[in-house]
Amino acid sequence: GPGLGGGAGPPPPAIVSTYLGEDITFYLSHFKDGKGEGEYIPKLKTLDLGTHEVLPFDVPAEDRNRTSPFPYGGARFEFRAVGSSQNVSMVNTVLNTIVAEKFAEFSDRVDAGEDIHDIARETLNEHWKVIFNGNNYDEEMQQELTDRGLWRIDSGVEAIATLTAEKNTALFQKMKVLTKEECESRQHILHDHYWGTVDIEAKCLVDMLNQHIIPSVKAAGVGPLSDLEAAVGTLKAAIAEIHAAEDSYKAAQLARVLRLETMIDIRAVCDAAEEVVPANLWTLATYKELMFLDQHTASTPETEPFFDE
Image (cartoon, rainbow, N blue to C red):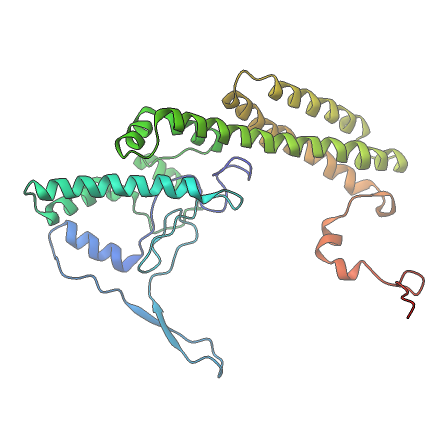
């Protein structure tokens, strides 16, 4: 979830909508309005790679919208709002629990004599607002979805805190998946992991400032030296405040401010220093050197390894 990576930016924003695509949206729209009940037959399109080695082949016509947190990609849904370093086990537990609870509700209603088509139409009409086939990165569209009343939490820290919300613990207990105490323990662990990660990053930045950036600025005699030295004190004070927090939730809240506000501001000061310090005095690798490593390294007879046969 958003929090370490810059808020609700790419991948998909923190607004839980689903992309269905034009075909299945059209089909479901007619179904919920009572205009048809036939089988949904997904369309296909031919993909031609333009090579002799690979013949043209058919693929589902639905394009999985990469801006959507929950796109339909032809015979499957994808949940794309999981962080790249995040363990998917808890995510799958939540998704499967939600689906199981809802299917159990449908089953009970059918067993009680209700028509499955009526249940489906009622559900579609009640939740149609979650379907959005547009660009989720568009800020105007994000506001539109928010105004619809879609669930939105831009902070990963606050999203974690909802794990122990009454409706959520009631769901897990009803489905015999987790107890309230187990939800609480997982929430604590997730918050601890969050602020612990920020703690490591902040201490790393302190080392980079003390061991590289400040010495480089001093050696060059140019750059925002006083601001950099003040930044070290700011970081150390923020780290100490996190460690003194009353609980893991408060520590995570403080860590989020440190990571997404304080450290971003300090990064700007470091960038200003890099702009003016001569390259031969800058001891950290630059983006140019990292991205074009082959053009910035060379072997000479004196540096090449010698192996005695």
